[in-house]
Image 1 (tube, one colour):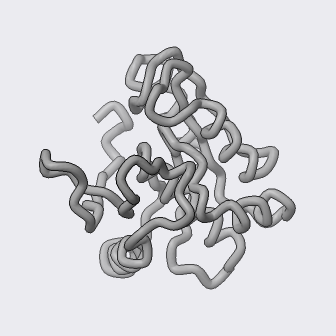
Image 2 (tube, rainbow, N blue to C red):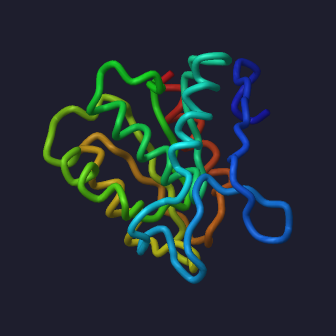
Length: 178
């Protein structure tokens, strides 16, 4: 509601069960392995297919906002779209909150950082007190999206920043990019 009356939201549900509390995940990992350490993301193909299908049936969408695994997945999708002009997934901009480095996509992201092909503006948000995903890994991910990638660093933890100044910054980013 604070984004304005012209903002409609569509929420995608990840296809994999996560934990015992009814949560969902975009990929699976071996026990004790973190996304920024993993050699592969189990089931990510299913997630990519799900999002491409959503994009084709309910999209296109002006912007994408992802948090945590969703932010890493958003980074992967924006990177793939920047490298492939025929990609189905192509938002006008993306907001990534609480991301870490998606380790299985290191080669693609390093390749992306060496090109001038990033044509989807990104806003990367991370908390200095994030104990789930190290803030330096969110900053590392941002570095792959070119000199135009923006950052919003807050004092909080592993959260979507909801204090007034952060919401205003996200709204301003979206308003100028969409």
